[in-house]
Image (cartoon, rainbow, N blue to C red; front, side):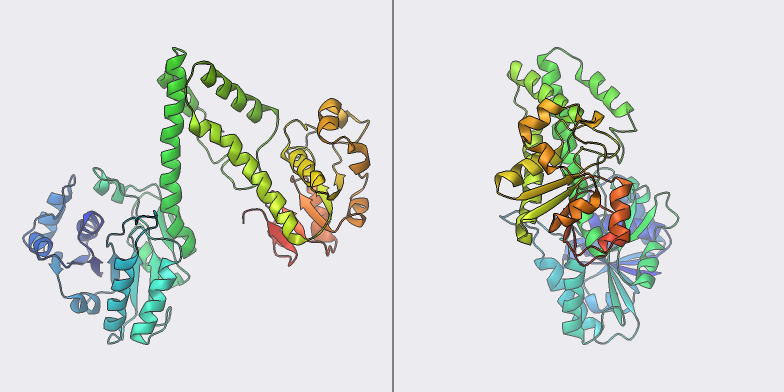
Length: 436
């Protein structure tokens, strides 16, 4: 294919060389005469392992060139890769000025192009950028998005120093678009690579770079805090983290990485507090670990706020234990939520088949009576009783019984879902999820 790459900084230069190496004819576009002259002389504008050889060899084969002529670059190619720089402003928000100024240029030039044109944004951008880029092009060109052109989000995961290797061996290749043909066209650039190609919504794709790198920063800080605690206790921190990473079932896995309600149960809370206590005993500061409990409490506050927004005062709770199939109540976020709502004057009705006064689920009697002193009056023996006594339903765990009722029984009450129920329920007009 004939491809243009806009921006000959680090991102653009790597894309220029790698696309050419894959057999495409690639034109780099930049405002810098120096960068253009370098590329046209077979010299890389950046310092990066392997990119010098790529650009020199592909220039010698005639597959790489550079120009300041935006019009020729757009009119003579079928895909344009957007790789211009975006930088953080004083508030931390990425500065999109370069991106949207470029969209105006594309709009003016595409006005005179009859062929369908695809733009793949590889720059770091905020969610919604692809749509705004399209709207600007529509304004300046008079053409229609997804009819005359398409804008695709194609975020990069390239690290300086290993960028060429990362290009050919990415963790995943991500493409965001609502135009299937355009998405597939961009995907074809990567189909021979070993990584999975994921096509998704543009806003999802645009957010992923921020999510990934924030999690990477979190991992670094977490490992450092564990290391600091280990050092104070004269424990081998690298051996601790080596064993930690050996657990691929829970530790290094998708487990626990699903948005939802607050965590609970006897294990997580107990060990979290225990680790904090060890750190304090050895005068080690652990701001990240200490923030975990605060973050958990804020999720309970979020749930309370959702209840308040409904203006309903009679609340039915489906699920009291911290997860289905158990009668464990200790540190259940459901208990904390109910306790808070009771304190704010709400009328509460609870149904949980695993926990009934006098039954084996009542083993934490002292705990439950401390936090919910009128527990027996709050419990209902049937789901139908709870429905009759409520104006609002909160689902706190994934017991099949709750799902079956919400699917098969017509319920007019607002539903607040903490556990991501099946799509059939999520489509109901009276439904709301805690963070989806």
